[in-house]
Image 1 (cartoon, helix red, strand yellow):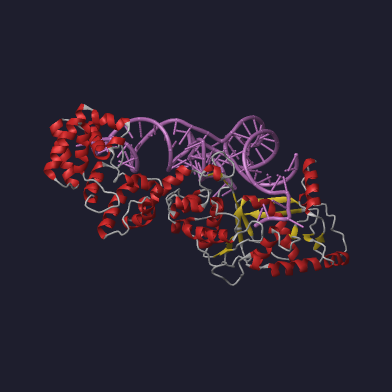
Image 2: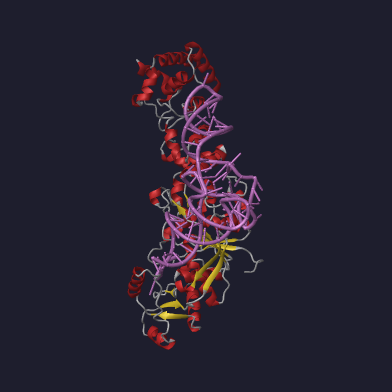
Length: 499
RNA sequence: GCCCCUGUCGUCUAGCCAGGCCUAGGACAUCGCCCUUUCAAGGCGGCAACACGGGUUCGAAUCCCGUCGGGGGCGCCA
């Protein structure tokens, strides 16, 4: 490869399902590498599996990638000088080179049926050998083969591979990798239905798209020698390869739905910030030189380095993702917090159709307090609902017990007197009132705060009271689908409940 | 079964290539303390790992061999 040439990498998913975080990580590493090298990131869609490819998955793929913050310089939707970027539109290319290889006798027609191949495969497996194609059709003369094809007989095209020697390549992550040719049979290039096989199409496309680095999952390691054989047959130079370790679930099996959310859109729906998932995925199998952990995409682009990618599989840790999500949530401005939270709040049905400026200002302050204690945006609704729900008849036993304490009654009594005098409370008022209640009752700490909390919220835990109280005081003056009660109203109900 | 990759705290990892700076560092989780006159957040601290066995060497987490464990591949899927 020409060292001067511009870095060109690609992400080549097949539209056969939702974007899995494992694949998203592969896309991310490619993207980071491209951006950091000021190269080109290509999106190519491998839709040659007619059985499983679906248009809706294609759309979803693009939107999931965009949500994550990845953009591509060339791709099926944005075009580019090396297109088309949909494999299904590149059939003539695959056939052209297929014909060339056939003419050069580097490839040959294979008339074996899938059924007989399957039987041979099972047999080899049972005998404890690598199932390798027998090469039965290798020596059918080109004339005979051509005649049979002309007659309409189904045929696949196979690459004629040497059966001795070895293929060595340097993996950017793992170093030198070596494969004996004995364990590699003649791979199918073009299937009998005319569609190219993966190991063939990927070579044609990568070469024609001038891809310089192939960064992909470890599950492709053993495909690599087959692909190199195709490069050699075509007289092309192979790109550099880098194989990333797999992403696993807690039980060390490949991450799957059983382990929880695994598709990118699920994380979006659960209220993870794209930059948090981005950050987490980058740290899964790669580490920055100075150990920084909370990083924005731009910082990651600067720091990324393929040589610091780890070679062993990594377990997806939801706890750490939560933590990173909290870190990124905190970094948002009030306005951004509101923007991000709005859909989740709307979903809970607690917002009026139209938000006034007062609503917005109030919401920004409320969110500022609420976001602190939340792992993901979808947890917000339950917390938010506490502003509106005040049901003393539904308190849990612990809360009831707290209210029923003798000292609690004193606290509530004193608090009631203060509030009646004061009217609407702001932040400072509340602090002063608590101070006076404390003096009156001689109580402090838990004995003081717990009853106040329960009397005002019906809950034993939640937002800090000095944040919560001013919020409900002000919120009570705004209109909501469900009313928000003021302190005074709440306290009255609490006193009633105690009688 | 065969081929390939891989193995540092529960988890993600630093250190390994250029052996002594490692009584192995950081982060998440966990536990304890402090702070806030509650919870959470935050601050501080604790617990916790070089898979095992052989070499090489004055000296090995680092180099070599083997064993065991984990993963991937072995398709007319990608």
